[in-house]
Image 1 (cartoon, rainbow, N blue to C red):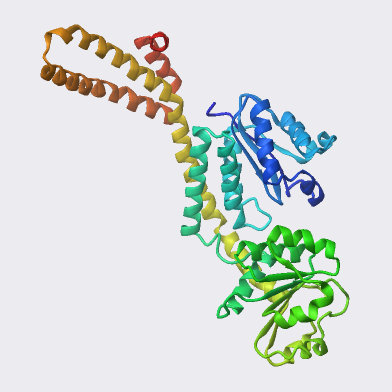
Image 2: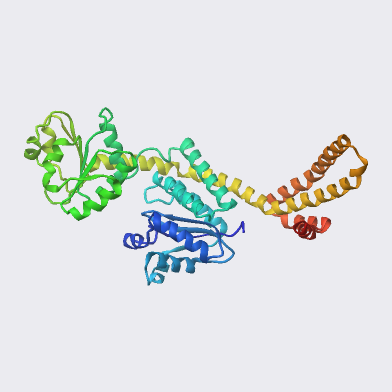
Length: 425
């Protein structure tokens, strides 16, 4: 089943956030779902990928299992009416389309933020879970390693992964520039809406440990803190948190500024304190920056930084697609050769059987030294006889003409019966 790769995808392209959240799988659910698919489908090379933007299943099978996959996904998630969401899924039943899609997803071409740097690690993680569940075969192993090699080429040969192209990424990048001379900077994130939560996750992914988060609603802060391994600061203790922090990232939602000049002046800032204001309207008063040691960066600074990086990535897209095309061509050559490998092995076995039979006829007439020479000579002859048919088979693969040559070799050497004879010995 080398030319039957398929995919079913639910992503931000067709499904709104509430549906993506409903169907998303965490690690435990992904592993459970892989086991379910392995047990219920006549498929191989199964990969399950689930992120905040997509939930996808890739598999190798002769028939379309998309309806069954959605039903099994509903059972895994406990969603009785999941068939109602079927139209939000994209079905890719053509082998080449599914391969192309996995390449483009893995490179970040299909991400909400073009060139998303997290997706490659998420794909690697999905591959590891598939390997752990033993749903990977030679085809998927080769495909994934080709994808990882392609990603290295994209990083080395293009600007596609350069710079922070989302607001939350750009925020962390700016923070790291500002605190480059501070060891383990103390960070306080105030306000945990969508952008504040994204910043927390990016801080975690960037390895920042000294982070506290605070929010008026404690119930929103606790699960995010557990997810990101951060400390919750009670909102009533925010003044103390401001005193301790080197960087304050604010995404407070209100009509008037939350951080006023009078509030910040009372902190008695003794060294630099950086405010990164992601709120619209602004949550940090403009004149706060008149306080010695206090520097304020607003959403325009961040978005300009992100827009420059995004444009750089967009300009790199044609080169990325060119690299992907080259990689897929090389992968397809390997896939085609895999189609003829059983015939090559049968031919080798047929010739080896003839060689062994002829060797056995002279076994009693030869001394050990003569037997060794005869063994070496006949092996060398067999390799030379094999060389041309193998080269012709591989060349026929690239031309798409392998089936005719396979039939000829089967007839000439009676390979089907030969393989049956080998099994019964």
